[in-house]
Amino acid sequence: MAPPILRSAVVGWPLGALLLPLLPLLVLLLSLQLPRERQLLLLIGDGPVESQPFHLQDGWWGSPRLDLRVELPPNSSLLLDVDLLDGAGQPVLQLSKEGWREQGTWSEEGESGTYDEQDDALTLNLRPRQSGVYRLRLQHQDLLDGAGVPLADPLQVRLSVENHSVDRPLLLITALVAAVLVSMLWRVVYGDCRLRVHRRSDEATACERLILGAPGLLRLQVEARYEEPFHPPAGAGAPPDGLTLELSLTDALGRALLQERQPLRLRPVAGSDDEGWTASARWHLQLDEPRSVRVRVALPQELAKGALELEWLDLLVEDGVVTPWPINARALAPPPATQRA
Image (cartoon, rainbow, N blue to C red; front, side):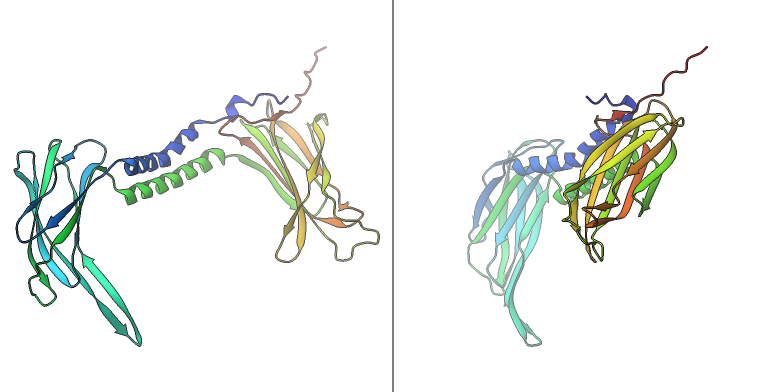
């Protein structure tokens, strides 16, 4: 059974930073779930038309939003008067909106097509002084065609009322920026370890003597790559599925702190020039105090009677490693206590 991880190796407070990019996304999701009130108004003639009463709520989350869209006939324009009335029928907001729609064909350098452009929408983001029931009063003026001739066609106006609208693009940008900042924070906290050695060679054995034992864990990573020789020897077999790695750690007096033989699986990889096989392993270890440690890693130089040969062996040793949550880490055997005469 693996021993418990050192308390100093677990740094969990950056996990709370993961909530930063989630908060704006949660607000955005909740805003999409809230109901909207929709109405269809029909403008006939020059007289005003009032909408059905709707409720506007003032609060800390979002703001009331009114969306108006006029369905204009092709090649026409108008001037729309908009009055927001309170529960007593008194106007609290008055404005005018010019709208137009243009439809036709175009041709240029032997190419042609159609277009339909319009400016027929109005959005009002409001902050009412008090929550209550309101109505809209609409009246159009100067509904004209492209030649300036008045039109008598009835107009449909679609009204949408939303009480808790939010700036959705801003929330998405905020979530993206927060995710970048959280990623930088994690790199600073969990990537701030001491690189003791990073060595790559074509030899089957890697051996280093290091002073290890910074607060935190010791991380040891081995990666190897094998390839087929240009001229395989006679009697070479098929590439095997795995190999055995030998790892040993000893202290300054040569006493064994860790010795093991670990089977590794060979994974085929396709490169730009030729194919190869890789194998890798990683250990998290605990040192009770700083000490001189000799790290030795050994792999077979050849596999399957020369069917594969070692291309390179990569050894990475880091100490002072911290993790966001407890992981299984093997404790290195401490040196025996010195007996006094």
